[in-house]
Amino acid sequence: MKHEKLKGKDLINVGIFTAIYFVVVFAVAMLGYIPILMVLMCILVPILGGIPFMLFLTKVKRFGMIWIMSILMGLLMLLTGMGYYALLVGLITGGLAELCYKSGGYRSGAKAILTSGIFSIWVWGNYIPFFINIEKYFSTRQEFGQAYIDAMTALMPMWMCPILLASAFAGGLIGGVAGKALLKKHFVKAGIA
Image (cartoon, rainbow, N blue to C red):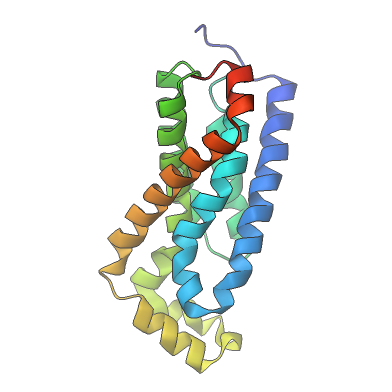
């Protein structure tokens, strides 16, 4: 496939699907007020977000669309007070997801699912502050209350870091499979096997 520049329609699709994906993230984030569900968001966001993300992939035909979406999600996390780690992680995983989907010629169903897994790792970036300095993280979030802070501290030992990373990837794969199954008609129409 010849490399083509992004067009206005491509950027509109990125904007629309980023907004839809963010709504899913925001809805799931409301569950984060319950400590155990805060931990599970690392898998819930990729699974539930997999459906709109897979629909987005039926629109991706040019290099850069997935990477831009990943950057926008990181920026939205920064603007909503989650810090800059999701943006840093998204810069890397968004680029890798872009390369993965491109390697399938933007037409491979298997690569689309793998792309969903790789893309979803950006969510893990939101958890990095828990493993770097959880006391500093909660020093600016005292409104959550000491019981919540204690529960989250107990749920986030250092060994959870790689587990959450793997969970985000696995959740993205599950979300990709679910999204592809639910949107089979769109995949056939887009010519994605």
